[in-house]
Amino acid sequence: AQSVTQPDIHITVSEGASLELRCNYSYGATPYLFWYVQSPGQGLQLLLKYFSGDTLVQGIKGFEAEFKRSQSSFNLRKPSVHWSDAAEYFCAVGAGSNDMRFGAGTRLTVKP
Amino acid sequence: KAGVTQTPRYLIKTRGQQVTLSCSPISGHRSVSWYQQTPGQGLQFLFEYFSETQRNKGNFPGRFSGRQFSNSRSEMNVSTLELGDSALYLCASSPIGLAGGADEQFFGPGTRLTVL
Image 1: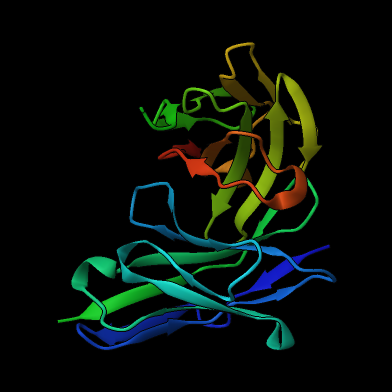
Image 2 (image 1 turned 120 degrees about the vertical axis):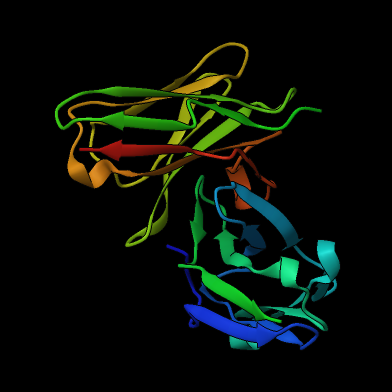
């Protein structure tokens, strides 16, 4: 079965600094990969998704992610973080079965 | 289009009781999935319904059940509540669902269930 690992439980960055959130997946074939963001008290909002094709995916709010098959990774990046980006970020994989597996999440704190 | 709505937003129950949560998907979406979110276990898939049929079920006991109506609205029921059932229950809808793992899901704000 597919699985997702987000190695960083909590990350703190300064406003304006760059951000990279790590995500590693386990699956035998090409997975469908997603990044979601959850603000306190809210549901999850899709930031971006990768199904096939170009391995660099652009999403909303200035986020991008790169699929690296050799490293089984799908890391999320943003060149300049804003205070409003503080939230919890979830990587997810859907892979041919009728369920989706989420990582444990990475909580992002943004310092002024 | 209106987003996914979940009612109620907050619930407090006691052990042994049962509870029913409701989810209204985005208009035109035929798939509804349910997830349980807890600090310890994270987001866990409960089940998915598509066109009134349960297509898949996660690893939860039979106390957790659901159904979907012809208008795609879905309900989730938990019987004989336990303290460990305290969680945020999220509903997500999508046009065609999780078959193939490729469909984007739109999440509701969740129902916060507290079991005392």
